[in-house]
Picture 1 (tube, rainbow, N blue to C red):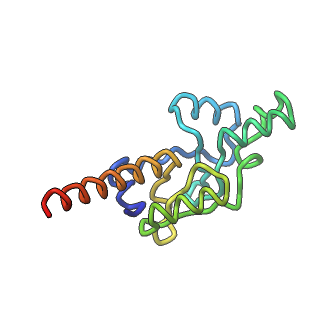
Picture 2: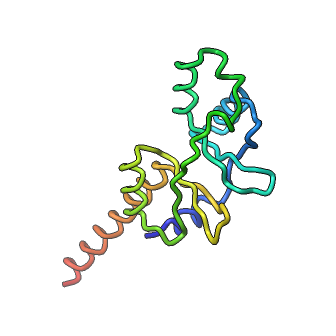
Length: 143
């Protein structure tokens, strides 16, 4: 199974903010949409970075309440790992586990087309395993 299959099922909506967005507004967006990260994009849509709940928590510990007045551009992770539609679920899981992050933007021909979370990856992997088990059961019963 590939990332393209996950996006086909979950959709291509991307929560994003401009680099000048205040962290208080980013936190509100995360809470309101019940999501764990947003991508930071410039006006042309180019991926600049990503801000996660974890980034905000670390900033609050380091800067106190003043962190809420910082901007997404100041707080974002700039070295963002990405996937393509052709990345397999196993490859994405390995990448996310090795990098210790939970959100993976998906790029296609230089354009941001979606984002998947570790929850999306785990759900896809479980579905894949259930399908394999069902196929094996059908083979044994039919054989």
